[in-house]
Image (cartoon, rainbow, N blue to C red; front, side):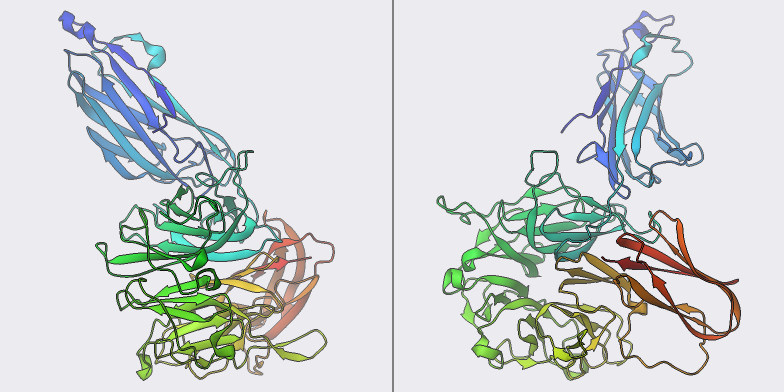
Length: 615
């Protein structure tokens, strides 16, 4: 383990007994920030402090260790309250007022040492270099120290300012994971770009910020990581408090598969025995999923090029190759899903040859019936998901497929499929309506408020048309288009009431589910029941957009627009308005592309939402 900072601390005891003069005490900061010496807001930093009594004959009793945590330019601690605290000796105490903690009553025998380990979350939004200073104090009887210059130890941590999300990026995969402090990060895998990790919510007003994962990924030689083509991301949730979720990244090229044990901050290479031949060391991993079974209660599966399937029984530490799909490279398994209830049942969606299945943990594969899929199943399968409510309302186990020809479902293990693409309609700028069927991803999320038989709604990311949704009876109800239009939707995530959409070349878009509505929603003539601020439409926009809000009674209101630094850049309404539905237009012709915040203020309410200007 890398030693980030160390300092010898010598203390000599003087008194009536000459033995006290033989006592030396060393203090070292053995480990500062992991995995490197820099951090972003929201990152968890681990410190280890070790006190050593180097005397071989004399005990050192009643020592006290003091650690002074650094503050930012506003006088606030750059860290949150320490957690995951473990001290081998003494009594631990933390004072939030002074931003210091102590370990007192430390007794060390000759040659004995003590260790303190603690985690802290970086909470300051301000970049800069911050020094964490530790010191040991001695009992009053210890009046002489031959080397007072070594009584303290410092560690320098550099906090970096996170970046905005790249406006023109192409997003391939989206997941959410929890770090050691139980805060959520979003992880984004791109097409030819870095793996991005979001700052947890609440650090920056109205706008999510990001950092690029570097440690453990292929280096670019300039201190960063090489651009990656990320095919899939998977999160294995860790139920242990204070321990981060694991994240797996399936990558086109380099080492193929990477694992992160700290929610996407640092990565390690996973070796697939037999994956790359000597003549062709290029590794491609397409998808990763989990199924029941194995000594841990779950088995991980990964699909690779040439139709190969790998599995891990130890949480991804080691892998073995099962049998390949028939026809090898002709059956590239782009999508992979395991039956959540049946051990060993797997389904693979290929690029151009339909769906394959295995019922013996991937050892033997057969082509599913594929009846009902155009071209006798010979088409692209982009995503596969098991319905989380199979059996609800009398429905048998159901698998949904996002394909190049629409959305399909099967209830007989893939022997036959039924298309469910009704409603995937888009009206173009010329007024013509067309049906877009190229569904790239599907996702389930609570709540479904329309039909009491179902808790989950179903979402689909459609290439060239944005996001569609099914509420109520998703087996027979038509799709409803949400506010996102004409976007090449490639990935979708529903997280904490927010719909996160990854696009091809148009970056990332987020809207609150409560604000998402259909383009053809009827407007009620009755007075609103409460104050509300709607999501702007269109969003993203260029250069004009409409913002609607409801007032249940006549009120003095102010509707303002702010940039991501919190500066007010426009006032759209300021004065008393009557009760009812209102809409104002925002012309951003003179503004730069990016995220903006709009805020509605009344005497009793303040409502805020975000919007994206994309030029």
